[in-house]
Image (cartoon, rainbow, N blue to C red; front, top):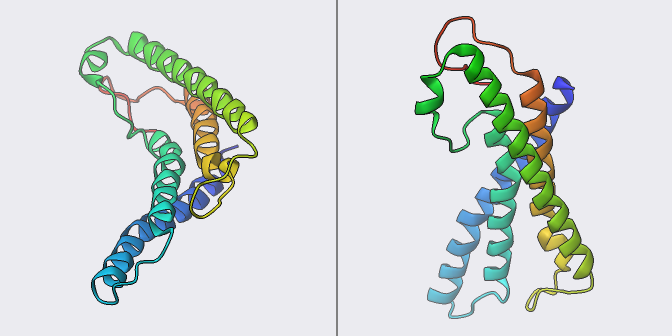
Length: 162
């Protein structure tokens, strides 16, 4: 399972980097096309929005795997080690369940709006929303995976990064 997750992280990282690249290049290209040639490219703003959606949702599982998601660990770090580990596992499992619920809701939304398309580029809604579904589903699986595989720290201090 660890090899699969590592391979997934690499693919997600590549896709997120390409999305970030598009968020830099596409708006700059649009500025040049409008300012220099007075001829903007139709649909470039919609493409940029899709790039942002891809970046946010595809990169989310990477934050989870690096234990870099937003959390308030000050209180948890003060607890005794066994209580801290139990609480962190519980938080990870509940977070996984919450993301799974959101992924299912997103999947249902995609299913209900399957025939819908974006107004300018005519991108199918399911393709536009697929990064959200993939990101939440992988995030949910990641939370559960890390909750089950986390090893106790070797010293009596904060829980180590996964």
